[in-house]
Amino acid sequence: MAHVAPTAPGRHERTAAGTTHTSRATLARPLLMGLVYGVYAAFMKRQMGPVDAGNVFYGILCGAVFAACLMALARIGPRLQQEPHAAAYGIFGGVAFGYLYSLADESILKSSGLGLLVGAGVGLAAFYRYHARRA
Image (cartoon, rainbow, N blue to C red; front, side):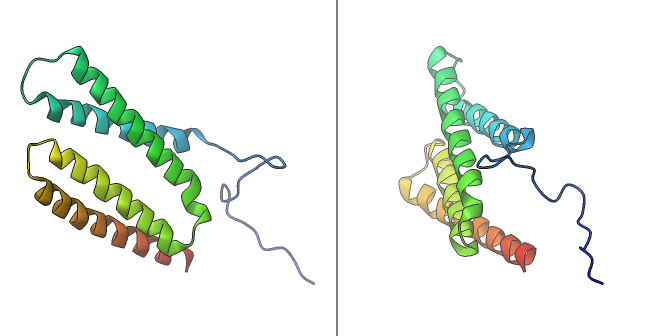
């Protein structure tokens, strides 16, 4: 007799026909990371001067853009193959780091180089994670 193999609890998503499931953690992680990114960007832009409305708006804007990109990547990424998915996270990480580093009044060449190194590291780590997880 053939029986259905048991599944681990919580490993499948319950979805209605044609809808996708969005959990709180799926939304909370990008929002929290966007908040941290925005606060850090505002702090770097301030450069030890007084806090004004421009710095606060700048931090909110940077955090919102970061969170929106991260949510889009988390939403679209699983539909991609492993290699483009890892490359997308690498590019996102490299651009985000390079931009924050450029706010420290460093040269564009140095910011781009360090962003490229960080992006390559993030891409390799994501590539390893996706291959180890789906293999």
